[in-house]
Image 1 (cartoon, rainbow, N blue to C red):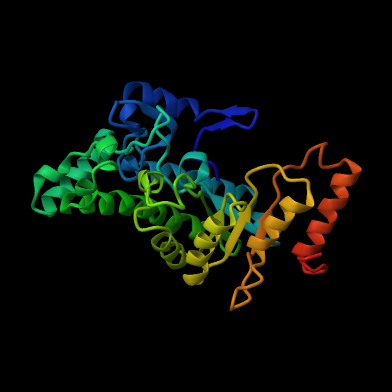
Image 2 (cartoon, rainbow, N blue to C red; image 1 turned 90 degrees about the horizontal axis):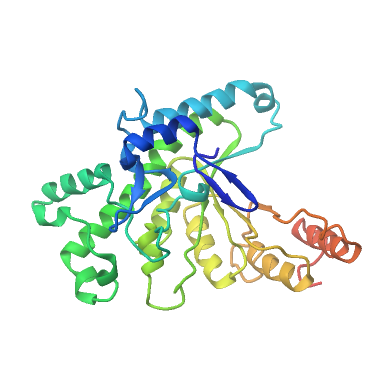
Length: 317
């Protein structure tokens, strides 16, 4: 269920025309950074419960779309031809704040709806001065800023809004799509993950890591689909969060893969040999079905990879 603009991958599918027309009159329906740049890939979560899309909220629009799809393909749901539905929760269909238009790390909470929410939260915290989003460029350079009470308050509000958005949409999606599995795509912020610099994760909304998101998915009976299975140390961190919460973890490759070495890295993550509980991913989506894959030597490696994924060949072969 895609509720975002598709960019790249040799395709460009914008948001519906009627949404873009509303956006011309009210650009605050889009995520906005400190410089006032609008990210038009997806709608700000600030309008999840605001009736600014005609007479509907954003969540009501998403729900109407999902209900229409469920009704149209009822027969395929009934006979379980449809086994899983992935619900988009942000830019690129992933549960995260979108990147800044400038390509730098900026908090995406400057539209008037998210700012109103932040101001209200600050008033509840009895310090109205906290109701202004901080300057991201100084926040990540000055330890005092993001470790201060104000910094902790902001990050918790920012990351909780991400989780609350997931709850609002999934609450409707899981009800509509039962019995198929409902899954959520989660991307990893790899930039700086092996260092103390967590600017990418924090700007994306992952202040407390991935465990709070996994816990939310468990409560909503949803699976976690991790979108980049290659960098194994980082992926293991996300897998552990999902498995620790007791939810199914699925994955897909981010880059084309045709050789045994590349497949081996995927297998190491998909079926960890040293996991004490013998856990593995619930499913894997292979991205790269093209003419290159169908070349004889590439197809032979792919067939072997599929056998290993299904357990008919040792991962070490």
